[in-house]
Length: 165
Ligand SMILES: [Fe+2]
Image (cartoon, rainbow, N blue to C red; front, side, top):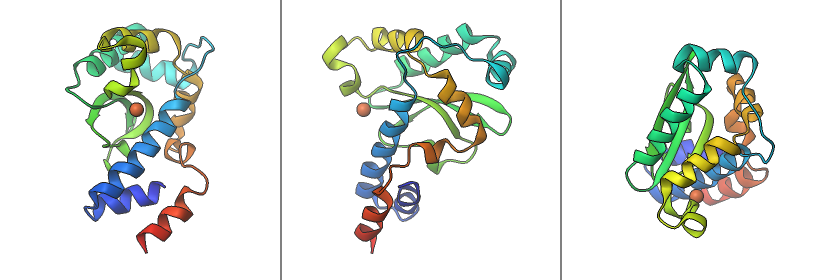
């Protein structure tokens, strides 16, 4: 699937890009969440301290990015060489097609992500997710640069390759 996303992006195939990237973004997003309360530790905790001065300031900044992102998109925590960066991308856009954006964590801020439970209250959705259900173990794992593969759905590549040829 990752190969398809990059192929579609490079070739300007908008429909294929939107659908494959959204599939990957969501597959990644689900793994970013956990019902267990967790805190960052080890190298991740160190990177967070170095870049933001602690977990609370990081979550504040990530929350601001998510809340203030205009319209549909995704808030991201990424690794850029050796430091953490917060950003957001529009619509289906994904770190997989940007240099210096190793995906670590994402939050869906398309309205469909929160409308059923929170109506139009995006800030309440964002705070609720970031305060309670971040899978820090998954975020830490992704420091190895293999986060793209963790959301690569088995079989998706074969089916998509047939669609391309
Ligand atoms: Fe979504």
